[in-house]
Length: 99
Image 1 (spheres, one colour):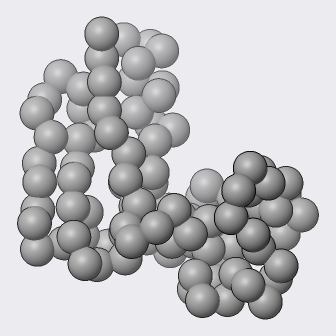
Image 2 (spheres, one colour; image 1 turned 120 degrees about the vertical axis):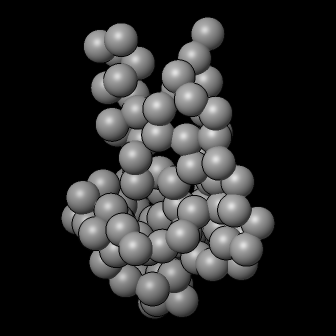
């Protein structure tokens, strides 16, 4: 089995806000609520993966594993930096499908 973990720090709201091209502090003003309505919220506000990737492209990742054939890399110093390794989720899933 091929596996990976995907993390967003400090909370998944970093990723959700990045999908909209905003800072996480701005989510409340758009009516965001934690829970199982994230997909609906992102669709209502035209959030998308590409926007999040652009927003978080330069962020240091606490855990990075882009290739399931290799061991992941931990960077303890990046734990406090807002980031999400969901930036490579789609590419990772494609690599699993076409492996």
